[in-house]
Image 1 (tube, one colour):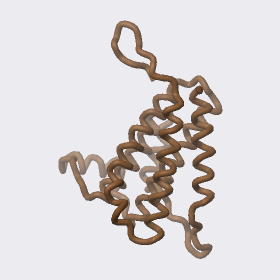
Image 2: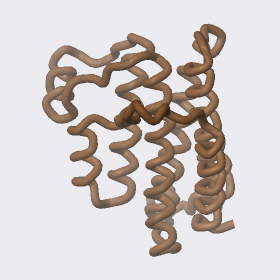
Image 3: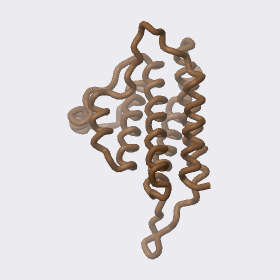
Image 4: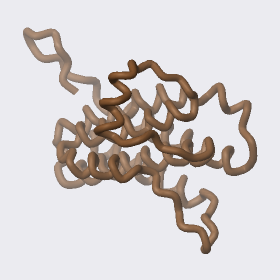
Length: 188
């Protein structure tokens, strides 16, 4: 199956997942899943694999808040804050829902590029990168599944798992990466 078919399957699965998600009451504006700085970084990243990288970093920033695990040095944190702004805030349910929506937006971007140029090699590269991030992020959040508090957290977690599974299914339909001759590197 080619990359476009894999992305189309991914998009359809995600649309159905969000159609079954709980609705926000009419009096409450939906929460933005990206900060203003992250939105600007997405707009600036015109190349698909770079844009997907921005989505992955945005999701990772929410993981840092949820888990409280920090591996960066103070200098790296300062530089990160200058480019990306302050870490996002919110409840665990909101942050997990943000990650699910970030995955959904990444899927939409992949689908858009694939629809315009189904032979674009960056689609496979970006999808593989997104699949690796989805696997890692779900793995980091899986231990928290036992501690879910309330329907909002359970719903957010389910939404995240559905999007991650859709990403992995699409990535699994990609042909294997082609190894470049003479250099020992693979081309996605």
